[in-house]
Amino acid sequence: MKKLAAILLLTVITTSCAQYTSPPRAEWRAYLHGASMSDMTDAARVAKRPVYLGAGGRLVGDAVETPAAATYGDKTTNDNIAAVGYMANLEFALYDALRKPGISVQRAGTDVVVILVRDAIMELDVAEISPDGADTLNTIAKILNKYDATFMEIAGYTDAMRDANAAAALSGDMAMRTAVFLARKNVKTARMFIVGRGAARPIAAQDDIGRLTNRRIEIRIAPAR
Image 1 (tube, rainbow, N blue to C red):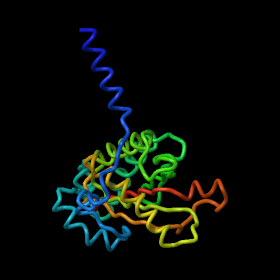
Image 2: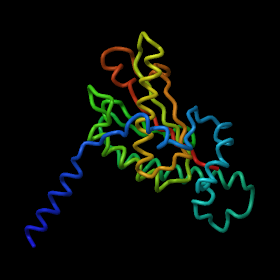
Image 3: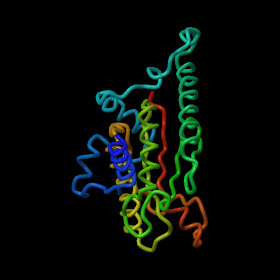
């Protein structure tokens, strides 16, 4: 019995420490079928809504238990109240679970934004998700699957680079690599918008320390309604 317990414990430890490996790049599009390779604008969300609902997605109004009092009054106002409460709970869940260096959770209106500095989730010298990064993204995936009445934009950013095309390619790789990981953890791709923005929108100075911060993934999560 003790020997069996030891074997099971060793299996758990080995599995938890296993290096995550992204599937071959040629397979990424198959994993991301249904995702939009564009910015998550209001118009894009409206256009994507039939695809999202057709893939089994649900709206915030369906995900939130509506008090009897909310059946009266203006529907738009009631839906907004429901969305605010739903996203506040999502923000708290992410904030509570992601207390790690290089990771922050912020509010942007109704939306919630998770900022992941590249070095916090990827290997330093290889374009691959690190073991710590896999643990972090697995946590995010579980929360996104719980709060599934949402769209998300997965955007990659680099620091300032001389070659704009290289910056766009690198940021796109980061975004797609992250999206593939989430898709493999059962996050519906019909919820996803994926974009590489290169060196656009820096959030820190372009010095040695700031460059590390500007190389990042941002996951912006918006209520589906």
